[in-house]
Amino acid sequence: MIIFPAIDVIDSKPVRLYKGEFSTAQQVADDVLETAQGFVDAGCEWVHMVDLDGSLKKEPVNTDTFISVAKETPLKVELGGGIRTMKDIDLYVNAGISRIILGSVALKNPELVKEAVKEFGDIIAVGIDAKNGFVATEGWVEKSDVYFTDLAKQMESVGVKNIIFTDISKDGTLAGPNLKQLLEINNAVSCDITASGGVTDINDIMNLRDSDLYGAICGKSIYEGTLNLKEAVEACK
Image (cartoon, rainbow, N blue to C red; front, side, top):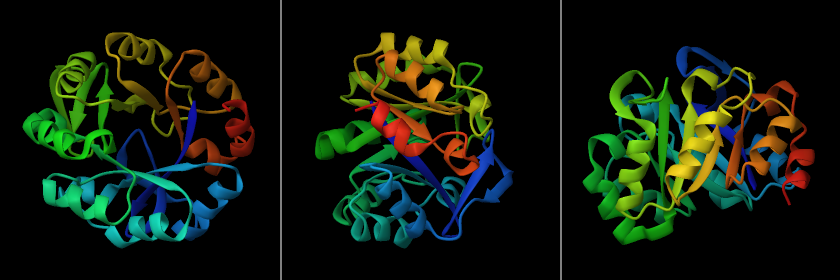
């Protein structure tokens, strides 16, 4: 299982949110590149990054920040937030971003996902964010009546191979991941599933690893010190 340390970005600074609420944003480090280098030192190969400004504005905002991590560190960058057009995808792919996460557009414009997968293949991933099992979009401020596994099956049918699943109610809470829903989505589709939200400590990492998941995103647990990142990486080799 791959460990994805997370850097969420507002105004080019690393922040964390509580349950996706923008009003709870707290800066967690001084510098994005310095934070990313710390992940390299812990043995990570990937970093999960989110353009929170982009999520709200529905367009890429902190572009230079993400590109600098891709260019100036050995980390492979997985990036989501505000990516809504083929032009946005093309910009980031050409700048060295290793994986593009399409979120809100997966629900609102599945044809774009289909087109993107056709052109860029496995570089395209889909982020499915849910509250009480139903998909939420636009930086989690809009709710839908679409069940999370139904969207996952639709994405699988257009060729998506990688899905990042977030239980919004767990995000930033250090309350443990939603193993029940993660197993549900992992059993519903053949896609690689990455768990996001709620990871607290090494026990959570072991549980996710033993659930045959592709990856686990760790954010607040790293910044709060409840998870030793190097230990997590070693446990998943």
